[in-house]
Image (cartoon, rainbow, N blue to C red; front, side, top):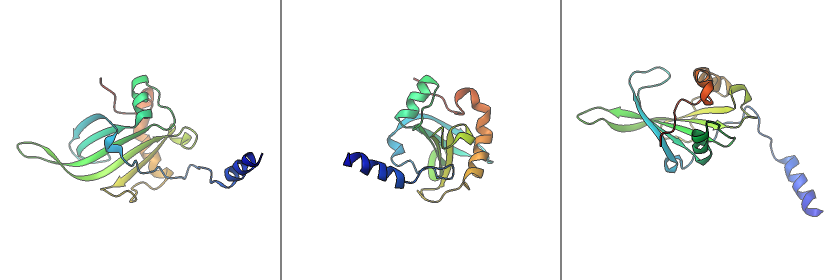
Length: 154
C-alpha cells in the first residue's frame, strides 16, 4: 500500500511532457547503426556537406518494418566536405535529430525535430515547434515512408 501511495505521489509531481519539450541531444549516437551517407552540394535547408545517418535500435526496427515506434531516434550528422584528390569530412556543421513520440509531436507527424550547432549539445538551431514545423514541411513529401528520407539497405 505504501509503495502504491509513493508511486502515485511521484507521478503526480513529475512533469508531464508537452509539445514545447525539447528533443534531447542523442548522446552516443555515433555507436548506433549507420544507415546511410550522402554528399550534398550547395546550400539551403539541406546544407552542403557529408551527411551520415544513424539510427538507434527502435529506429533500426522501423527502417526494417516501415513503421517507426515511439522511442525511435534518427540522427543526421552533417560534416563539412573537404575536397581534394580525396573528399574527406571536416568540422561538424550540425547534428539533426528526429525523435519519435506520437503523442508529444502529433502536430509534426509524430516526430520531434531539432538541430544542434556544430559540436554543441546545447546550442539549438530550431525555435521550438515553429522550427520543427519548417522541418516537417519538407518531410511531408515522405508521408508514405513515415516521413523519413533515408532507407535501410541490408
